[in-house]
Length: 297
Length: 326
Image (cartoon, rainbow over the protein chains, first blue to last red):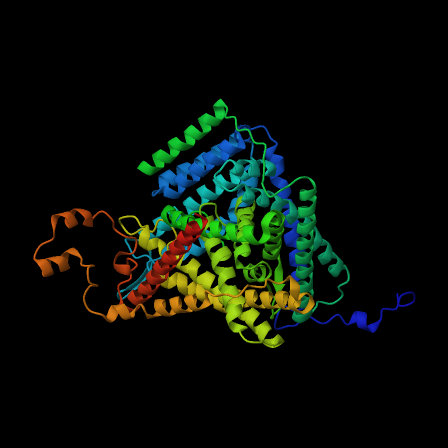
């Protein structure tokens, strides 16, 4: 082995992992950022597949769908009891089934926030946060007791169910709608056109900037032998962020010039004709009905 | 920092959408005036830039990494008003397309991260760099701006979450939305942000903006002379002094409640009696319901004063704008 290639000493000395902290082992910011970029791109591309399937939600006009979903989310926000919230989750599951959206795709978007909520509210089940009628007493010494209270458990369940219902509904909208349609849908809401145009353009250019970020991180990773120090790493990242910022300002200038060359004067014009079909009316009617029910409950 | 759907009551969500509407309006007008037709691509690109910054892991001492929101970085390049819009756009994309933060809570999230953060950071930086700062002071100012802005935004989140059990609980005391009281939320947010997230934001802000300062200072936002500064300072002093009102005995002249009217006049005029129940304010007696102890009461008084005066300034500002236009 020693015959052909002689590894220079400086290359062998890659810096032993520090035993007291995580420097030199595990993932550094480069790897984490590359992973974040990869999972972001995957997340962007995945919904397109479901949006192209033939299902109930895909058949509804995106504008009617957004309005209906907003009403349903508002209804879920107003509910005050567990059975009604559970009913909403059942509704979301039914909508997913008839829209050919798999449970795994839906869960992937919902589980993280649900898990976070669960961990966050877990202590509220105990009497030291919300006192109430004891359900399960863990221990009791003299007058001090630790128990799970009915009120605490109920409050915890209500929040988790509500978050599950609301996040599932938003996710269903996103999974069943392609990106251009999402922006087309928002356009019919009373939001200034400038914001919508900037929003759609922003989404497009996130991809461009992410590409620059990915390339610069990959280039750095390819040239990395030993983990950089915090100062080096921070300095490098600051330069990359500055580069991305400069590119974005340059691109904004070029895009503006290109738009001006094509006759843009600052006023945004769109070709949107909103024609509601029977099923769109039915969908909005259904959402209003659910909202009215929720107000009563 | 991103509050998900379901954590805030519909009332709170509506209040924050309503609070952000005039902010967005003023920001759009300010940006329109300074950037004109260029605004759309510039805002879109800077929003995309804000989004990308929020994705990055920043290396911090100890070998770990953390995320930053970049509110102060964007404000220092575009100015606070344009930052309001580009950060709001970035937060909207995050909420709509990626489920980071809720749709119903978007108003509150924008209030915390797209309004409080860039403005707090911008003013803190300007205050610390008054005079002719050297390189070190500028670095320190950027760090402090990021750190303070992050912590003020975190305090806002803590208050928003902490008031939920007070304003929305079922009759038998079961919280319907975020369950923890103010004492817990403020402690939890303060601990994590004073010790960890604030440091990341401060460090990230200092690293990025000081690099721009070194290489291409022209890229940074240059504010015009700010004649409003003394007004702001006076306002802050007034807000801090408001608890003095607690020391004064009796009601303000002409602001008698029914009981005081009975004591003064012996009866309540019929006309007033009919009107009294008409409007029960969100914070009766300039206090937040549930704030009973003297310390809490003073805190409630300060919050009420800050909100009230902020609202009045906003109304005056908007009236002025409309007046000028007319």
